[in-house]
Image 1 (cartoon, one colour):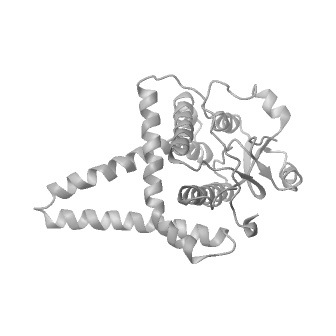
Image 2 (tube, helix red, strand yellow; image 1 turned 135 degrees about the vertical axis):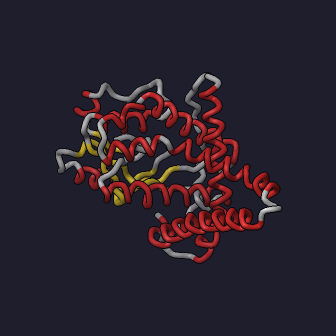
Image 3 (cartoon, one colour; image 1 turned 120 degrees about the horizontal axis):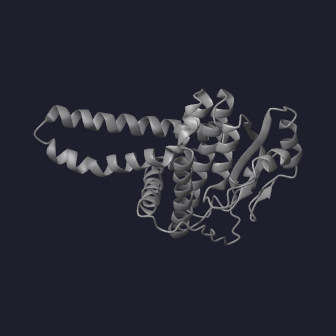
Length: 278
């Protein structure tokens, strides 16, 4: 079992995780992560929403469909013999959890997502610290993508989904570029009413679909359900571009061969969350 130093797992986390290993094909299990200081400020609240969506929409959905479920670095459980067989973690990779996940898949092992295995951890409460953390995450994912580019050779739905997952930072960068291009497209399309209307509709549809997915995920997975939480989803678009900017910066560091260093995320020990969430 692996937890971050600031993790506060539920007392029954280990017991619940063990149940998943009754299936001999399961080599690793990823539990559900919560923010223990979600109510500290707007940034931690938005980041906690992102965590909910990442765990309960992406990972849970992938697990249900038999696709690529990857380890998140904390609240993760791995069979010791399998870990030893794969020579442990790659200490030279910024995202050693993602890198190990890919090696597990390449060797035919299964990773499960366990929504009932819960742990809380601190979310960075200021922009600088959160940006550094996300830059490390995306930089590490890019490293793994470059290292395991041949994953798709053994084509199946799980390996294909793994390749798409490793493309995540690049997809974020594309979304950022599209956002920056909107003013230019708007100016050049002033004389073309049809092009301008089409652009506006495409942006509106894309944003609406994203917000609908965010809202439904929060409505289905949070207790108690509060209208204010759903209304805050409107700010998720801005948070999305913040993440995209971190991915873009991480890519620049890789392109310009800047030294890749594992930067420890600063923690304050803050605990600000409603008791009903615990």
